[in-house]
Image (cartoon, rainbow, N blue to C red; front, side, top):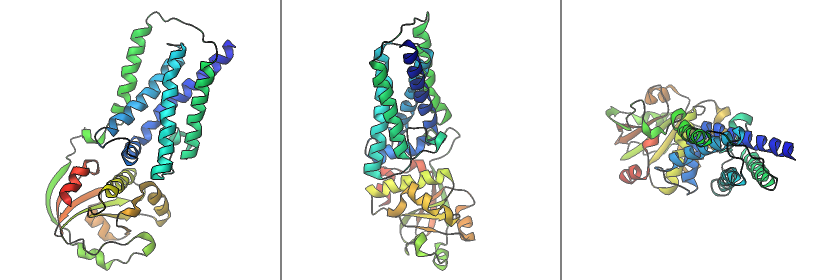
Length: 308
């Protein structure tokens, strides 16, 4: 029985730690999904998702090292996998995304349904272990080791994948510019209807125009963020102009959900000129002149309220 307990505990420990570690690859999408399904705000979501990632890794390490083998310790993995499973289900029911978050998606390329199964396995292992006799093992310096592991695990997601709003490298949220965009050039470019259509009034009033490519990971995050904001502010003048291989179009649309945002695919030199060769590039435009370059992570409800 002791061997069975050790094996199951080791499996649960590895599963818990790897779940937290590979969550780091999808933190930006996960925090936007938290806002999209109404579980959080733009301000708090980056912290919630990184703390959850850190708690997964901390719990896995404690279980692996046998620092706490009491049944009370099993409350941690149970609560984390329960949160993960509910989060995955809310993504399916409320926002209809097909990507797996808070799971081993980046390791096995799993979809969201496989992620729910993974969470169920974690819950099942926790319940099974709770009903098995637990062995006891006392570390001499258990408390300081647990404290160090906790602080390290919680800090790690913020160090490795810090919230974009921290602007560690000195990125400015808004850069004031004065650049005539000559957006009338866009009217001369014919785009098949399958790949979207641009509005005809881009030179009128204030507009937020985003230039993204279909394969750039930050572009998907920017586009998905704009989709979420457009749902709340349907009258906000937001347009997304994309570029890339048409083979990547369907996946990009599935991941970014930008059907509610005016958009179009444009494989033309005008795209490179307007985006200045770097993406994602977002401009606040007033009467056809770009007056600000905007970081995608700086766009929130307050920004759009001023834009309307």
